[in-house]
Every structure is written in structure tokens, then in C-alpha cells.
Image 1 (cartoon, rainbow, N blue to C red):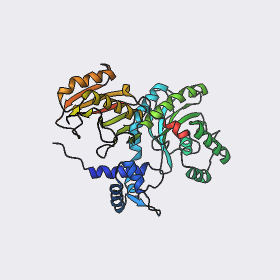
Image 2: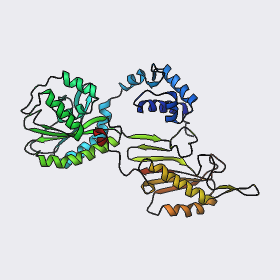
Image 3: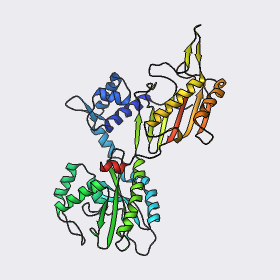
Image 4: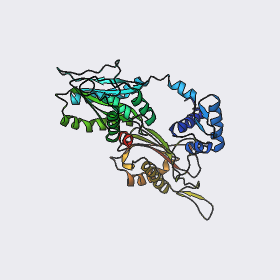
Length: 396
């Protein structure tokens, strides 16, 4: 028998997730709305989390993440988890371009590569994981600089020493500010022998779903090989790859206001990267009645599997639309019937929406479902056709 989950822990993390996702402190009502809890439940969790330091209260009686969360976050080895996601992409691009490719991040004020790969060529440019890079004249550094909050970026630009390291190093602060602004608008950076004579490097941002820049993806090589036309060709492929890496960090949960409220603390749909997971859904309406449930004049409740199947599948369709997917993007469906006597009727309706080239499917009979008028529940997994474009978000 599986160990039961602790719902209080799940709810606590939902509260923390809501506060983390918000750009401003949240009221109790804000948290309740974001998590699907009642105001009383949300307030109880906020007070408990405040007591242990995971949540902090502002002067206006609103809530935000507390110092305890920041302290725990310091225990994460950020470079390792980023490297784990990035390394396969870096290696593939290095093989494709036959040049040095890397992913760099800004950690503790220092720019350094966390993942690198190099093609087997006689003339090579290597990246060291241990050597910090100058933020003002390396391609990755300038991308990361452009992605910083304005106040932090300006502080660095005011304080950094612009030492000339190569023939084209930008040592004028006005010119560097203009270059950083261009990078923010156009979404790529070029180091044309600014950091090292004979080296050219191009970098693009890797951003999360909110447009926050996590890292920079670069390609480097001798100036003799890294011509303008070749860099132009590389750029589109690098942006696509950066978006794919950024999409790995994308996650969102949605409770749709026009659908029946979930009977528990869970969303209608959760999206992680390119995949969307639809929670168990039925023919239930917002007013708690069911499509396909009708009382006869004699008082008998008639339950129509065909009507419930149609309404359930269309509810799944609507939920998928909220993340930009459709029924044709579903790769797996699980269906739960109260009785296998309804199997033929369910199949009849199902075949109107899906063919044999459609999703994989499992159908089982269960003893009961949450409501006596419910005779079908379905859940689905879909692949979202196009992940969010973090680099585009970062430029907006």
C-alpha cells in the first residue's frame, strides 16, 4: 500500500509558490485566489509559515517570501543543476557547429562557464570552468549584464574598471551602456576581439518563463572562422536551443474560473516544460450539476454515458486551450468508468474525437467516483506544440 501524501505540506508549498511567483507582496485574499483555498485556510498557512520564517509580513499586512527560504536556497549548487540541463544541448551544438560552445551564469557577482564542449579541430578555443570572465567585454558577460535589474546593472556599470584586454575592448562607459541597451533590445551579444585578440564569440540569453535571464549560451572560435555570415547562421539555431533549455524551467498551474472548481487542492492543468498534465476531469458544471444526468418524471436519475463522454472530452479540450494546446496534442489518456457496461457507449463518442493514430489510452472500471451522478472521469497528458519563448519575453 502506497504511503499517503501529506496534504498540509502540499498546501504549504502552494502558498510559497504563489508568493514566489508574485512580483509584489500578496494579501491573504490574493494567496487564497492563487491557490484555490478559502481565505481562512490561506491565512492559517501564512501565519504558520511566518512563524518559521518562510513567509515575512510587510508593514501593510501583506506577505512575501521570508529569509528562511533565502537561507535554504543558498544551499543549492546552482551551477550543478544548470549544468545538468545544459550539457546535452551544449555538446550537440558543438558537434553541429564544430566550434566551442558553452553556457555561462552569473554567480556571486562572477561570470563563469557551467557547461562547455569543444569540437575536435586543430585550432581550438577552449572554455575553462574555473576561470571567471569579465562581465563587460565577454559576450556571455554582456548578455548577463543586459538581463540584470536596471539598478543592479547601473551599479555594476558605475563601479567596474574597464580595463583594455584586447584591441576592441569597450572602455568608454557611455559606449558600453549603449551596447548593453542594444543587447537587451536585439537579444544577442557579440565579442569581436574585445576579450582576446583573434577570438570572436556570440551569445544569446537563456531565460525562464517570466523573461528573467538565467544564463547565456555562446559559440566561440577564431575570428578567421567566425565570419559575420556564419554567426548570422548560428544565431537562429542558438536562440532556438536557448528557448528549449529555458523551457525546461517553465512550470505553471492553472485553475480555470469558467470550469467546475476542482474537488480538492489541485489545478485543472499543470504545465512543466513542453508537457501539460490535465487533472481528472468530468462532465460536472460550475453549479455542481452534471451533463448527462437527468431526473425522469418518476424520480429516477438517468445517467447518459454518451453525454458525459462528450462533455468530459470537451472540458479537456477547453483546459488544454488555456496553455495553447489542443486535443490533437494529447499523447496519453486514462479513462475511469463506474461500470464496463458503459464501455461501448464511451467508445462510440470517443471515436468522434480520436482515431487509432490518436493518443495512447487506458480504460478501467472503478468502484466509485466523487459524485453519484458522475459515471466517467478522464485525465490526459499532452505535448504543447511550441514552448514559451523565454528569449522573446526577455526582450520585451
